[in-house]
Image (cartoon, rainbow, N blue to C red; front, side, top):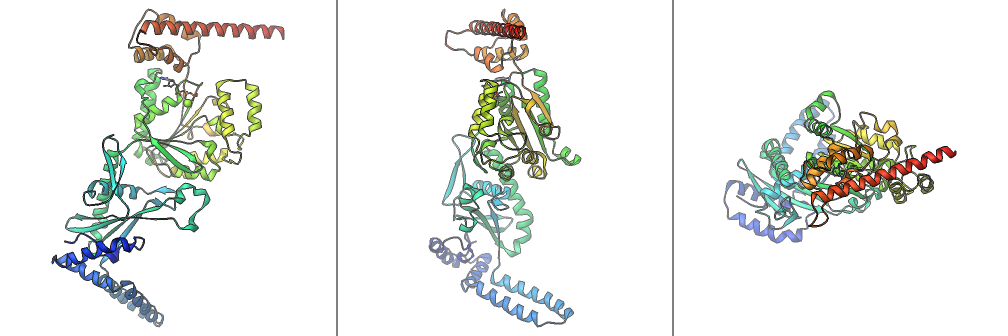
Length: 523
Ligand SMILES: Nc1ncnc2c1ncn2[C@@H]1O[C@H](COP(=O)(O)OP(=O)(O)OP(=O)(O)O)[C@@H](O)[C@H]1O
Ligand SMILES: [Mg+2]
């Protein structure tokens, strides 16, 4: 049984000089093997050595000449069928191999191919023992590496008595293909896997082997999967880091009933493949998280991702230059993911164009220096004035035709100012679930006290309950007070400090109220 493909069957992209030594050695090695399949392939190598391309060209020329001289339609059809049969037989004698190429990207550079990824995972797991040159990436387990075949590596694989060969190779992008809007992605090498097999194994390979390869690849991917946090550093290209946020629903303080409702909703969504198909809806769901700064909107997104085991795509809208860039980003996302746009009111002018710096400055002056307006000014400063993402572009991205490509995706918007959002943007169907993240209530406080201090009751709890009814304090502020600051700190000192802060906040509110009352009277 031979281990390698004849060198002449390797794609033109693989430099012959690098493979020639190996190919000749293999060819001579096979001459001694003497097995049936080996002999057949050896013969094909000899033929291939005579340059099968020339033979095929001759057949093609002959075929065209004969064909053009057959005027009678009936004759042409009968003769055509016969010739085609003979031509196929002849071709099979000359070259008994078929090949299938799997490119890294589908549809130009728009989307990574699932088949490519699955094959990569399969080959990394099953065939890495035979490959001499491998690529290694970090895996889920810190000490374990995920292997895949390096460029120009070739491995064989046996399946139900048939032998197939896999070859990995890459090509530099042609110069003419450098569409500027593809950015860095267009400059990267194009990677391919090519599968070779004998024509007589066609049914077996296409019908059974390849589906099995893909399934095993998917399983391997699940095992090695590290969740990722993507962001668009450039206009339409994703970059990522490993997502390792510790926030879970178990450590998110909020009304338990509300929390359970959200978790049930997420469960329904995750298991809703059939439901969405039955009712004819794209398998996606929109969440709008709104509330003052520090109430846990970003923490909620992290908890959702950890709960569902999804990746996060955090879109920085101010870096996206146009609606078509936004569409490309969207198409580049994978299923089982949460697509996030934080502070949506700061990123997009709801009249359709981006806010320019002057408008932002004016608003800033009007609003004073609240954290939300600071955030808005900062974002607007960052915004490129050439940016042209519009409200309608965003609406299309959420539920237009393109929104259905891919599946199992949550789209989450966060805002501090829900009242500023265009109703079209947050209507049900686009943002299906609206979740208010509010100031810390007594239930949320009890949860935080247990999480941070391990106490479920204390003499100060009643005082705190009353104060929380009168004062608005975010869970972030409460959590900060409940954090032990030194080894001498105990639960009592943390709770006392929280009471003190709540009382001060109450005093501030009272004095602000008095000030406003006096102003009102003088007017
Ligand atoms: N409900 C909560 N339970 C537990 N921790 C919380 C909660 N809310 C906020 N925190 C903590 O407070 C900090 C700030 O929270 P987060 O960033 O989620 O607020 P946010 O609502 O996203 O604020 P912003 O509107 O400014 O983006 C985080 O460290 C988070 O863990
Ligand atoms: Mg946030």
